[in-house]
Length: 309
Length: 309
Image (cartoon, each protein chain N blue to C red):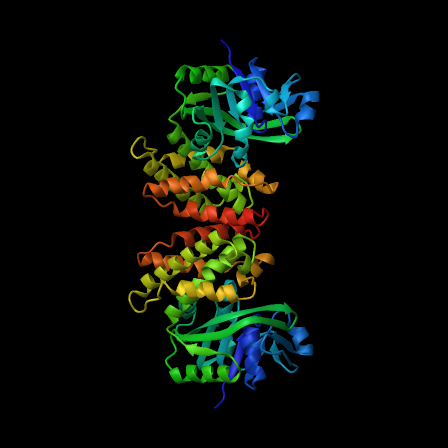
């Protein structure tokens, strides 16, 4: 039996993975915000390093109450908008709907579960360089993997089926331990997202400065140690993982991470889930991520200069 | 017997202290760079919160080889220009000339002594908010103290005479242990100079952000601990000094420190003496100033984006 998919937040992330699934023939229903009218008329374009395509007919909606109940909900919202899920999700849910939070950071599933105690939740870790580059237009520059880890999904076969659908759609994927996977993702996200904002630059320029590269490496080690403390022995991320991340990034195209784009467009920054929660989690388990803490405070200051709360 | 003074680097610092001495009737000889012609014709203006004055006749030079030998040389150069002292100083020196490096940072006297082994050297610690605001025009906004500490001056009475001259000229001053005084000055300079550059803001906006204020405080504690390690028991800066500095700064006018002005005008930053040397000195004595180190690397990155070395 094939799955019915919903995508909430059809931007760089939701637009890419939902678009790939739809292009492979899956039944996908997309929630749009500002692009709704445009996509309704013109469809959704995806320009990808792996081949461009144009979905001329898209199941597009601008209100989840018009959408069908679905088996899987991909959430590609900015985590700064997760408070909206309380209103957005209910129309899409049946008894065994699985929600996949394809977002960066830590503590996202925990917070959502508090709002929806019985909901099946998994996390999605996107390793991708993509951006919304126009109305109904997603551009994909590099990478593309989506790893999935269960938070509270009792049905492994459902997760396996989603992985198969993704792989059939040309998306590399695997199932991972969620907590470890989220921390491993943070080893990239914490240094690069924040430092490109504070230094107002891209990944490439950071990597071409020896002192900065050393600092990024030190910060990665902090995240690895923080993650291992938080894991309490359930897993162990090796410190050599920092070198792998540096190597991967060195080979990437010069890139502005999502937080840098948010900063450029003067949008709220995802500081809470990418910085504050991991800092708290590590600290509660006996490890003080000093450099990450400093970066968090710098980011909060920068955001406070253009967003008055 | 009255002293003959020279001022090398007649900007915000040299212009202020040299100007005050000259205005009080001392014999002061000023080296100018770009302002030479203007000052020769129009004199030197000092607008001060303690009263404005205009020195119509100034002993102005644009080459130290035209200047008389002096008893005291006040150096107000940026430390990034200290390599020039090798050429600038010799014409001014007699056997017992005392050079006062009124500069921020650590290791300045040590480096100068290597170039001039027999030279009498002291350090000057300026607690002042001032700026060069136009040709031959210095503006003084707040504070104004100048503390002095000997590095290699065998004649204490000379230092005392200079202090008396300064006090007669309306400059508050006292004699201090140089190493301790330099570290105490760094407790202000390290957080505020660097952070106003990295955050592209002024002291006031930093202080109005709670997280940033906490970070500045943590960084001050690092500097105090670094300084106390470097002092090896010869002195002890109390950690409560950080609170004093925060209080003082809270009461100051919103201010862009010298490094922020250097950044705004795309000039070299005084990273070497204000960051690199203190970091090394603390580390060599067993203390790692982690936050200061991170700030240093951020500053070096920022400077590298507009100055190619």
